[in-house]
Image (cartoon, rainbow, N blue to C red):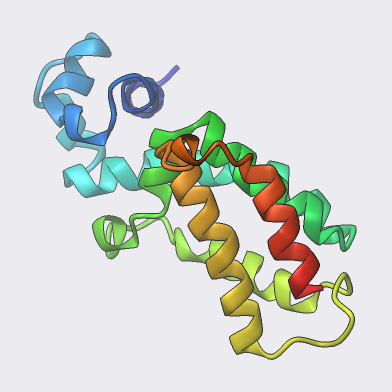
Length: 172
């Protein structure tokens, strides 16, 4: 594995074990067995390294969502999104931090932009939704996923999947 790939792999592991606030270029380099200056050879900024880590996470999520969207299975796509947020909360947090990743390269918005277009084109709804309705649906699904990733739904005793089903029934 190349040093660049090792930095991304170790960065991903540290992110998922410790969270975004606990990782740094120095910590990633040290855990990868490289000098503290090594990351700068491959990533000009910390944000560029985070973007590479985020791209891997987005690709993992895309592998789970894309088949469901291609099959017009809106419910399966939304469940895959929710499951990813539940199973990989730190990665979910990173990939949704467009403010942190903006301008860091890697074209991270292309994947989420495609999901938005696919969601709008799905035939799983009774009618063709307007872009505003698609955004409202995505906001609901994303909001529930964000709450779930931070375990904020646990005190309610409500299963997030059941809440997702209610949201989708109303939207389709």
